[in-house]
Every structure is written in C-alpha cells, then in structure tokens.
Image (tube, rainbow, N blue to C red; front, side, top):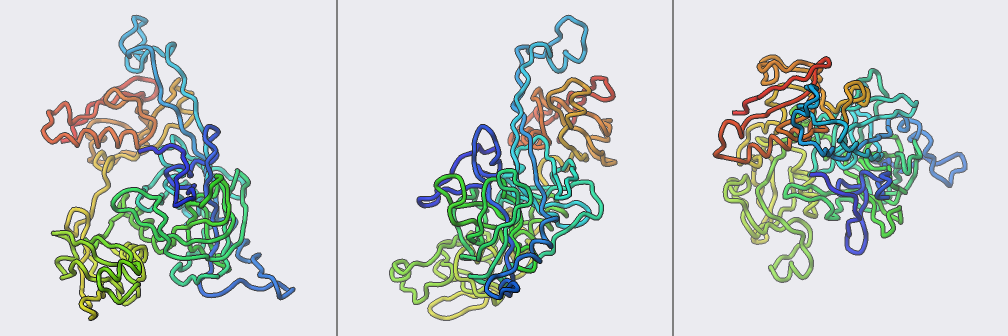
Length: 494
C-alpha cells in the first residue's frame, strides 16, 4: 500500500524517512525529510589526525563516497479519462482499448529522491523500501555522474529495506562490516544526498543500539535501530552508515525531529538485519522470515515486581502460539528469554535482530529463565504458515515474466501515459504459454490502467482473495501494444 508523506510521532518527536513518509523527501507537494547514511566502526575509534586531538575520517570517506548513489524516483498520478474506453467511431483500434486519448487528462508526475548503497560490482543496490515504494520509474546516479535505470528485485516493508538492480559492470562496491561489534560512543559516518546535495558526508557517534521507535507497521515488523547523532536530512534515506574504516554497518532510515529536519538523532538499520534480507531477496524475491512463535515484551522495574521477576534484562514471554516453534520446543508463558545461541539479549529488539538472521528450518538455542533457573532449549524455527517450507514470491513469479516500468521513451513512442514492459519471458511460464512476447507493453489489466509491476501484483492479490471464484474472476485480461499494434490476452490463473 502506498503511504502518503506525513510526520509520524515518536513520543513527542516525529520520525522521517520511513516508508510512511520520509523516503520521498524531495516531493514538491510534501516537504518531508529523509535520513542520511552514516559510517559506523566495528571495533575501533576513529584515527586521529596529525594534530592528534581530532579524529581523521578521510580514509573512511574516500572508501565510501563512490559506493553511495543518488536515487531519483518518479510517481505518475493515476490516469483518468472522460471516455469509457469504448469504440469511438473513428476506426482507431488503439482508442478502442485505451479510450479516446483526446479526452484523457494527462497525469502530473511527482519526483522524489533518496540514497542507496552499491553492494557488488554487478549492480545490486540496497536502499529503504520507502524510498522506492510505488515508484513508476527509478533512476540511479553514481558519484561519477553515470546514470542508470533501475529495476526492483524485491522489497521488505517489515524492515524498510529494498533491493534494486542496475545493468552495470565493475561498479564500486562497499565493504560490509559487522554492526554487532559497534560500541556506544564509537565514531561513525553518514553518507548520502540530503536536499539533493550529492555525496554529503557527516560524522557522529553511536548514541545507542537496538532502538525500537515504533515507526514500522505490521505484525512481522523488526525494529532494532542503531541510533547516532550524525546529521541526516531529507534525501539521506537508504544511504550508508559506516565505521571509521569505511565498512558498512547500517542503512539510514529515519530521524527524530519536530521540524522535518535534523535536530539531533538519526536511526539506521543494522547490517545484521540487512544481510539476511538482501540474501533472501536475491535468491527468492521475498524474505524467508523465521518466527519463534512467541509474544514478548520488555521488562520494566514495575513489571518485574508485579511478576516476581528478579531480572530486568531479557524479553518476557507473554504468549505462545499454539502451533509455533516455541511451543514445540517447550517455551512457556512467563519465561524470560535471555540468550539466543549463547548471545545475551537484553530487550525485545535484540531478540528480533538475532532471530531475523535465521531461516525457517534452522535450529537455534534459546536460553530462558524459569523459576530462577536457566534452561537451554533447541528451537526449530518456522515460517508464518507454521512449517519450514520455502515461501514463494507472491504476485508475478507464477506468470513467468520479468516486468519493468515503461520508460519515457517507450511511452512517448506509442503516445502512452502509463505502461509496464515485458522485459523477459520464461519458457513454460504463463506468459510464454499464452503467446505474450518480450517487449510487449502492458497498458491495462482487467480494465485497470497499470503504471508498475506492483499494480499488477495488487490486481492478482485481489483476485486470489476470492475463494469461490468463477474462471472469469481468476483470469487476467491484458491489453497492450506490441510493435505498434494493439494486442490483448487472457491468462487463466487457476
């Protein structure tokens, strides 16, 4: 679902830069801020300069600045028409499918910008989900001013991460660090494109770790942010947080502000979370999220007293799912989780961060306190469906085609204001079996104009919600253009 640009309250503050408002900071209609990236160090403080008293960030900046990109997105308004799309008597078959173009109101495009980080030389780039969510086109500009069109590999709103891809070779890639080695008080750098000021570097320290600021939505949301005081502003979302060696330790995602601009604190997604999300998006197109199957909460002094607990650290188990992994392993309501695989966990965000590193089917050791005794229980993690099977990408994978937003050149060539291009077709897939060719431009699906592959995903998702549907309700009726000729297809989804 596309979220409008708003300021979200966090206690008395406002969080910017998340898919709920801040990824599209440069929107002329809503001047909302996005966070900037930072560089965090793993085990050491910043090098001192030749003067001895001041840290020297030049090496970290040099190692990073070329790996952070400027992401520019375009959002087209929904096309409207005063014509129903029926045959207008002019004999123009194109107008029969797409309506009388003379009566169509041309949508007004909006633009926004953010940041991203190059992960490898082949063109994989990580950014925030809110930076590219719902975009009709994505353009990536490198520090050397080269420009590429990007396609979305996959998104994970639960962590506010997205993976995009450009067709490049030997691109400058960042070195991945270890966010678990970060220490509070350690110097870090943020690199990004605030207010369209490209390749901006700011410095600060790690102010706190494992922050939950309640800005993501959904039952599976994972918040374990690195808090820093490196200055970030609108346009920095999706940029790099690096240590003093220039190693990536986080992806900047939000700021706390009452004004919409930086006023002291920013928040980054640690690479421990990013690594798993990126790996799954590359391999499966969606995240294979492992679930412990418990409801947990942090422990305050008053809560500990009310429950007779003699610990304040850990995560209190307030509920256990009937068919979840925790119940199978013997975890009970009232237990306090204090370790995951022998690593101490002091809060709910730390539990989430540790479990997120694993996949359904993996077995982990969970240490709990029960009746003032420690128990170590092996837990085989499950997925949301209650098993350990691979979760397939929902939406377009069954169609056997790779789709992308139609470029401005293609739309201009055919006089279109929207469209989705079939970039490739998989042999044996539904597109191939129904004769839909590579290069075909999809304009309408089930009488709805489509501007992006996500629009088609939504249409398919809505179709599949009907359990007792007739054939016609489980089919896609596609209208489009191929080599200047209007062509229509029907695809059975059963």
